[in-house]
Image (cartoon, rainbow, N blue to C red; front, top):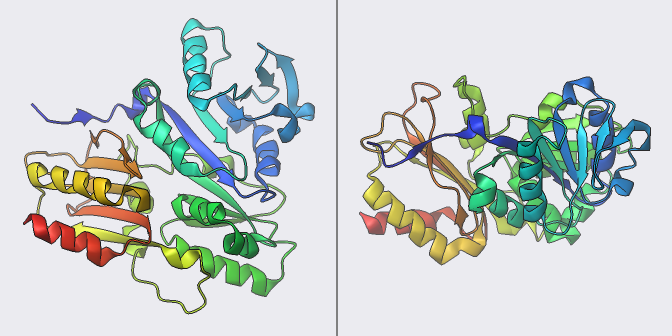
Amino acid sequence: MSLFDRDKSAERLPVTLITGFLGSGKTTLLNRVLSDPRMARSLVLVNEFGEVGLDHLFMEQVGGDMVLLQSGCVCCTIQGDLDRTLRDITKRRAAGTAPPFDRVLLETTGLADPAPILQLLLNHPMISHDYRVDGVVVTVDAVNGARQLDEHPEAVKQAAVADRLLISKTDLADIDTNAHLRARLEDLNPAAALYEIVLGEIDPALLFDSGPFDPAGKSDKVRAWLGAEAHHHHHHVDRSRHDAHIGSFCLTFDEPLDWDRFNPWLMAVRASWGDRLLRVKGILNVVGEAQPLVIHGVHRTFHPPTLLARWPDADRRSRLVFITRDLDRAEVEASWAEMA
């Protein structure tokens, strides 16, 4: 009997978190995406309908905080707390009083710190029973992005935890500005895939499936999610004062891990440095398990580890990616060595 649950992700609704600093094009993006018929059976959670400016897409009101769009998407405003809204939606979906949907897009306000939202989705038992994090998509404004990264720690944090970075308004910025921003984002978050979007034009598929869950067991997805190969040391002289505090690194373990040693170490890492762990994600080869174990956490909150159906490829090394603030690789490695 395994210690761990199999990954029940197929039974849970995937949630894509869409965030990005004020004015970075989230609303334009949503407007474009929601008019695409491929978005049918999506539920979009927004703070206010008014902000999204969806009038031209409205079809009918289905309950005070919910509207059905022509494309088949459902739009719902967040009433009070996010967890209350999510629980309410679960009830309505089960009772058949909400239009059918298979996935959720959650748009946050531009000043939002993504960490508490990820923590809620990862570790609130009633929420994680029904929903899973599918990925974090972040919009960055090509014209003002560099200044926002300089002036607002939230903007840096959003970019650092992204699985996919969408650079908007590249048509309005000159070539140098675009190139510098791109280089800076690649340095800040080497694992994220970068795309440039103009006027919100985007393939809606980019908003989905950026997480580890993959019933088909495709290796490129898992590799992209971990971005392990990209996490080398970057040393640039021109890093701004905020960026310099945020870094990422990947620990690789060649031998299968003993869970009774690894788990207490990870708990100690969380206890000591939780505030500095912006995101931790990993695929582990654990002694006694034929399948890979996926772990995923933000600060001190970690999702219960789950087994993937199969290894994505022949590489059986454990890989653990850290995205941190003011915590360097050497400290974490030293703490592991002490457990030996």
